[in-house]
Length: 309
Image (tube, rainbow, N blue to C red; front, side, top):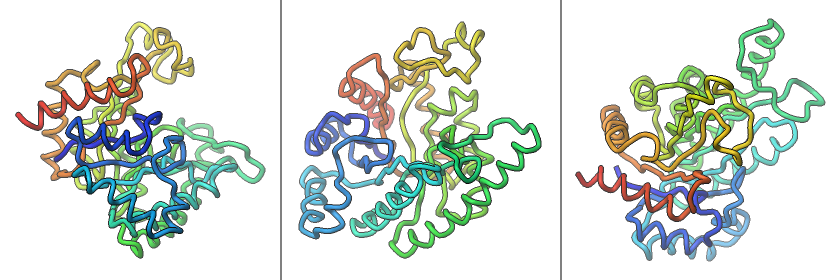
């Protein structure tokens, strides 16, 4: 395994500044932010698809620093009633671009439809009741599976072997059972982006999830979550209060090591090794309590210490 950096962690840095930071902290596998939820200015997809010279310059920037492109991340919302069409095209374009770059993995999200014609937002079903909600959920799966089957055919044609879904609430594949359902329906190209932060706040066990997923772990994000028991006691984990007021939330994202200590992260890496994962450990930093670069540096120091032990 090797340390990596998801460039969305430092969205205010330029492309070259982000690569320079990655090289300085010892990250070798770079996960490039490629649109979707991210506004990081690190990949101009249209330009790279249209201009072979621009594509060569882009790839050369990694080689010059001894880096590799581990994955392209389009944190998209396919199937969304409003932005879904554009995000579905984004996913296809990112797959095409990955193929031209010789990158065999993209990271994205599974998506979630609305509740039918005329919908203006997603309808995420998280409770198996009443009966019409359960029926809607099955209709959503019936819409999602053909989309991902077709997308996987496009991925195969472009040499992309792995599509890693972040197990993110508000999307159909958000935990182990739903990820495995999608994988069984679509194919082994579908796998998980093992980001423990979202598992923590849902009260899941990332170590158990890794063991259950096995070779369906396609990618890894390094991000921590702090659970605040006194707030969970009042709000539960389905807390809609703003992240801008972290003291009054049930949980908040943290730099790795700030909530779960080095021993836990060492065990996490051991669990990944046990299922045969041997790829990038990509820092994703969303800790609003510290500057972005500082958080990335802190995370890198912790993981480099474990990998070098």
